[in-house]
Image (cartoon, rainbow, N blue to C red; front, side):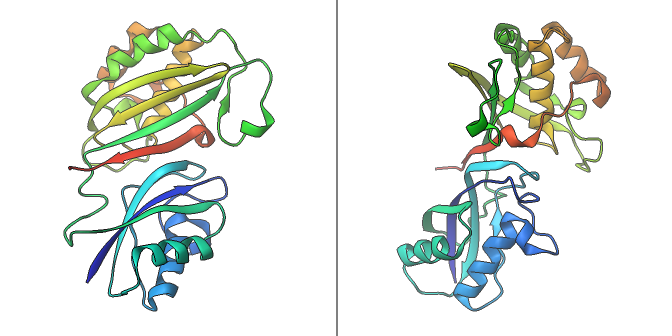
Length: 248
C-alpha cells in the first residue's frame, strides 16, 4: 500500500471549506476524493493537514491518501490537474512512509491575511484581500499588540463560541507584518489553531490599528477567556493557509 502526499493550492471562494459534506462538490476534500477515487477505481479517503473555513484559500495545503495504484507520481499529478476544477491545483506529489499522517505529524502552520489599505478598492484583489479604506492604519501599534500574543496562551477569547476543542491552549510562534504599497500582509505561525482563531486575531489587531483597542489591552483580553472582549472575526476572503511544516 502506497502513501501519497499532495501539496495543494486552491481558491476557496466558491467552497464551504475543506471538510467533506454530503455534497462533495461544495468542499475541497470532497472534490479531491471524487477525482482520486475515479483514478484509483476505489473509494479513497483524503486526509488534510487541517480544515479551512468556507471562503478561505490555500497556497500550500497538505494532504495524503493510501492507494494500491501503481502509476508514477508524475502521472498522478497530471491526472489530478486534468480532472480537478480550475480553482484547485496539485503542485507536488510525493511518496512518503506509511506512517506519515498529514494532520497528526504537523509541527506548525502559517496563515497569511491580506489587507488592502488604500482609500480606493482594488477590483482585482477584492476576492483575495480585505479592504480597510484607511491609509493611516497604525501598523506600529498592531505589531506591539501582536507581541503579547506570541507564546503559549489560553486563546478562549480568540476562538468561535461554537468551538468544541477540549483545550484552548495553543502556542503562537511568530506574527510578522509586511507592507508593500497598499497591501498589508500579516503572517501568523503556530503549533495549531482553534476554530476562527486566526480571523479573530486579525480582527482584534485591526481594531488596534484603527484605534478602537489599545495594544496594552491584549494581556487582559487573553486573561478574560471571554470572546466578547476581543475584536470581530475578520472576513474569510483575506485568509490563506500559507504553509504547513513537518519534521525533517
